[in-house]
Length: 229
Length: 279
Image (cartoon, rainbow over all chains, first blue to last red; front, side):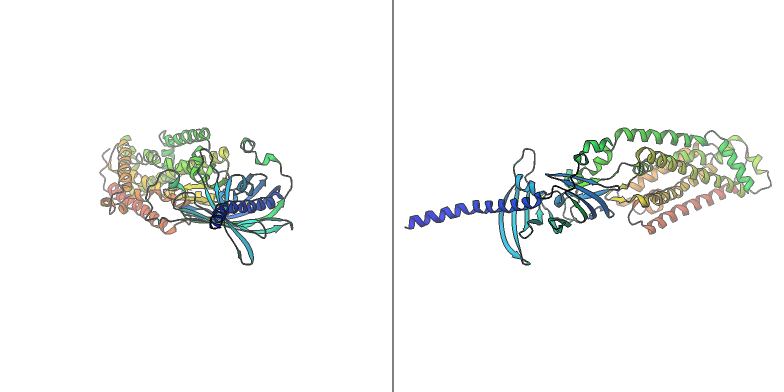
């Protein structure tokens, strides 16, 4: 009897991570499924980026998105918009990352799921890790934390709204870049990419005037054609 | 005084060497533009490479404004040489030509003649800077188009909206004129000391180079001397591309440059008034 119980407990413990991963995949699949309704969209963006060693005025741009992962940003003037947050696609979350459910709980009367996403090994690409919170009511990603390099952290908060009474799409994205190193403690000069990337700062993006499923042409996203113009 | 100014202007602009500066600018700027055009936007891409990994960057950054700013950065070492070519010849040229006695026997004071020559020197300096402005902005905007300006500083990147750029460049060139007037005043002063036009050109450039080196030396021992060197303030035009514009720093730099110019002009008056004209 004791042997049987021990075997059952061991089996349960062994199966628990697998069950968590499966549940996480279901959550990500729900997010993707919700987002699949949006074939394409066009949205106006207003962005304020405040990074160390950079002075950037408020930016206005138009963002074009088309499934599965085509993004084109058009701006008459200079614009610099964070890829983190704007670039994380629910389709990619399912195909390019391994998800694990860390926690699920009610927050502000909304069911929230905390997931850990680890990018699948790809030759020549660094393994990236994201901690994502999924809003279980709307099935959208509401919070992301990532660590692009040692000592640096990017925190993203996304608010969504119902567009055309059927599509949950972002209305604001707030990105916070932070570093464990203080300016004094940071070894200067650093080398390569680390030296040039601002360590601290914020970016706030406001989305407005959505036009969803207007059957955008692929030409908009064709960079080569764009360059030739 | 107006007739005197007209005469001095005529004399200065009738000389072949006065146009060397304009010709140099007219050749150099289009060459830089063509090279920049061939190089393409790689220059900006190199500067923004680290950021483009984490940000979507759009907009025409490789535009006429950026080219004009790059040219401004590159030319300010060479422009003093072109200015001293004319400023250094104003008084020593008369000595070399043996025409001093002839012009000083007229019923106008030595100081009036000196002032007329000094004003013409300042006018030439202003004209040369304006020709650089006109050519680099005109050609730059025509070839590369317009857009926001990415102003790269030592430890700062500032994006200046296109709508502000006309005023910013106007301010930058105005400050550059003030800075070049100090160079012209120096060459004009040295010109009053010698009787050969080559001397002021070489001496002016030597002083500028020595002062520039001292101004940029990151050594504590030279720090007390830096506020006394006019080269410390010569890059005042770069303040026009900072955000926010540091008006106090601009006033301080312009004050120092103007003080230098006034002192050099006063010294020239002193030397020229007591000069024994023997030719």
